[in-house]
Image (cartoon, rainbow, N blue to C red; front, side):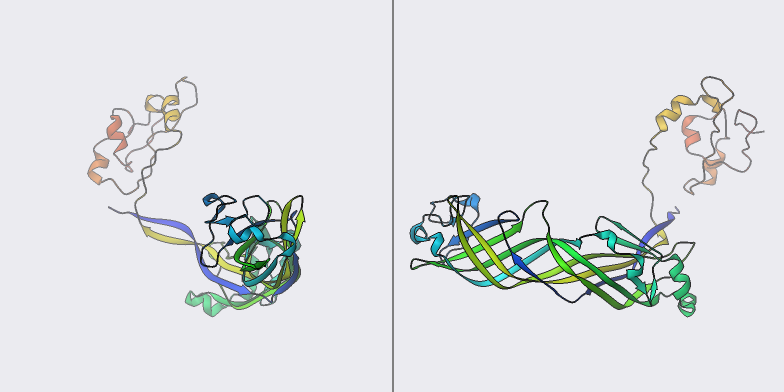
Length: 353
């Protein structure tokens, strides 16, 4: 049985992460832009979630929508006007990092060996650069002859500003009225709100590999943006508002932009695989509309050719000769034969000469 198939697959020729210089931005969280969640617990205990306890549960003191500092033991002495936070560690999680205005990046901002890409498109925070004309200008003949990719210098310059979703996690100790507790404070940007990060970035690498154009199919340079972040000199302040203790953190957000670059090209592969026999969508409609011997049901001048199936290589020669084309064959025999060269179309009946 011959199961070889020719298929086009997107082959990845380059997969890189390119970092840029850090961007520094002042952060000041507000209730309008950030949600806050405070967990307070004894030093020997671990913090637990709001679903595991309620305010007043001494086993887990958590800010479950009530005022800051649940009344459990010493935590009842936590006064919003007398809170001192000592931050031991910070963590910043950056997601949905992208250009604030994706259309601001143009082909001239993306060059290979100093030559701009042909065209630049963006879809779902992913940028795709066409290289049809570019490859005809930078392709290395010796690489083409040996079947290797051409190495180029990629420069993505002058891109920015950015926006992102932030999660700021602070851990440490809180003091109030002689009471000391451990805390975990999480600030998360609210839905439909992004934090703006001004500034421009440049990404460069000399390790870009571009395959040659084959069959009119040129490689595509794909890239998207992400970032690492950290918070310097965080300071937590508390403010009593409408009976609730609202917390705010200020500091310097250091963002390290990253460009994830991939070079892909549709490449022809020969696979040893068998296609699954998935039924055609319109097979029932075809059976209803076409009568026996290829005539249309309304006996009009319109007709449909039958038994013009391509040989997929799965039937033997004996099976192919077991039934002639056209009338006189059973449905089962028609479905299990291949059309030989002697089987010709004769008029409208589809039978042999």
